Length: 302
Figure 1 (cartoon, helix red, strand yellow):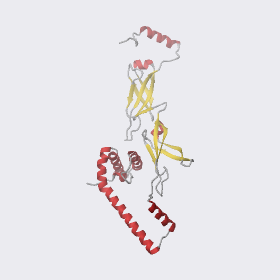
Figure 2 (figure 1 turned 180 degrees about the horizontal axis):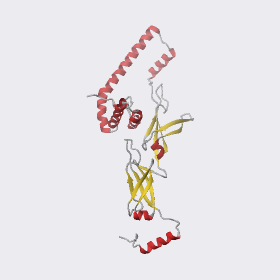
Figure 3 (figure 1 turned 120 degrees about the vertical axis):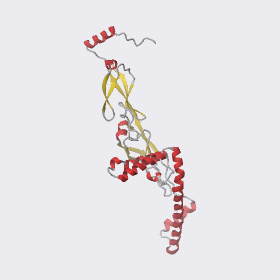
Figure 4 (figure 1 turned 120 degrees about the horizontal axis):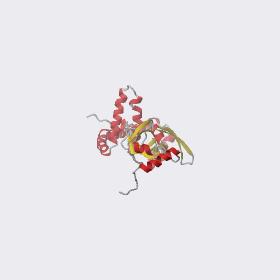
């Protein structure tokens, strides 16, 4: 059996990562090797398949636990041996140079000795979590945003954030090394930005479906009609059945929000029957005639 290092395929060095980190890594690799930006590149197509396979396994808790047992056997132990061997080799080489050539940098050696005696080790800085609100339109098409955060010394620091097209609500964007500074030479932490997609006057996002109102006239509701409604990226036609009531929902498949898997949710039109507030004399007469001949009584109790 050929073992695939799914973590390495996603650009991760270890399996000690969160699901959010896996998701961010997947998006970065999928964008890089997507067939649309690597037309005719067979290697990129194969890599893209491996990236999707890796994400499918690592994003499902049970599958990931099974895979991690194999990963530890194939990769984890080998890495541990290499790290142990590197530490021993470094120690031997360091002793050799000290014995025959003396300390190259006395201050550096003194600092290392002091660190060794004090037991201090490099420590990675803490991650920082923040969040921003974006519109449905920016989330659908992608956008460049700027955010400002106050640092530990009280100064404001600006960050450029690239919102990928089709980002999911509550998904996090990771800016590597933009968190708090490390200690004793350790790496800085990361900045995680949670994305909140805000509803607007045109659309409401529920899951992958986009909801919006479809205003129609009383006669269109009674007789039925073919109406035009704007989805987020195009105009679409919808059939309103005869006798449609206000508040009824009409779904148009595949015209909603992106689901991150190459397809889309639905556009859901909520019918809203609009009554004219100003009428001509002719319109008023017609409504009076209708009230006299119609036997419809909506207030009769069942």
